[in-house]
Length: 357
Image 1: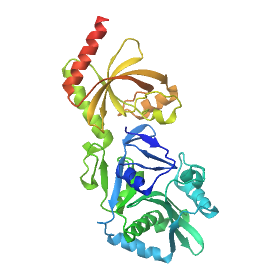
Image 2 (image 1 turned 90 degrees about the vertical axis):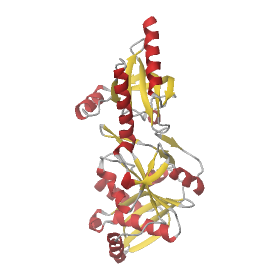
Image 3 (image 1 turned 180 degrees about the vertical axis):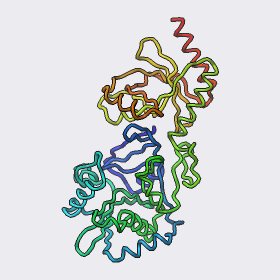
Image 4 (image 1 turned 90 degrees about the horizontal axis):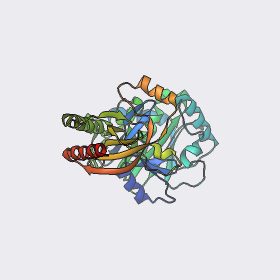
């Protein structure tokens, strides 16, 4: 599925390589994947990146920054959390972030516990004895995953966050690692764009299950844009066949990750509402499966409503993304196909049966 999270009790370096190669990433002591994100009142695409270390050459500006960083002391080794790093984390946290973020470095990396299922290393930069920057990265057999970086705001002019990434890449090259994974970017949400500056990165195409050059990434292949484009094409075909429908964005697609109830929650970020079945809470919805590149006709039902103030927030600030703000669960899949004519037939049959009843 598009958003998944697992909590293995043990993770080998080989297994980490496999997860990273399939667009997964670390979160605390869990590992997750996603292709859509909701920031504030909007849904965005998540595009995973990686850098081929065997082909990478540092640019002139990168070499210049690395040379400038020689005025500081750099130490790379196994992770070792201490009071100095916690103090730096809190200083950076209040400087850089305003939203929800872990209250401590230990909570962020270890979920508050002591066990670490990842093989984590750190890159520390010191000005004399003063720790001014640190980054953490996990290593597999042939991969490095950059997890977290922070720096002293008083040294912001030295680009230390970017510099620690360059040191991680340099470490990977010197130690014969093949890939460097910096996480995802979010097109249209500039906060993560700095990751594109590390080099000629590839992106993970979830439909093709391939890593392709980011420089040739078309907008139509971004996860959300591709999903909506496919649904709009189906919308027009359904309308031409006399089947009324409406496109909705669905910000609650990650409900399954935040609830205790064991239900089959709808996990798609957008859908076509086609008709209401018997009873006002039952719906026929068309969704697009980005992984299997096919359409599904689903029988869904309402689970519960969101507070009215959230609905007002989305409606006021998100006019270009008309949102459906009630939790939906899937009762059954009626049909699954990449042939739109099968959707048309199934919808006509469903509507005819409903009229007979």
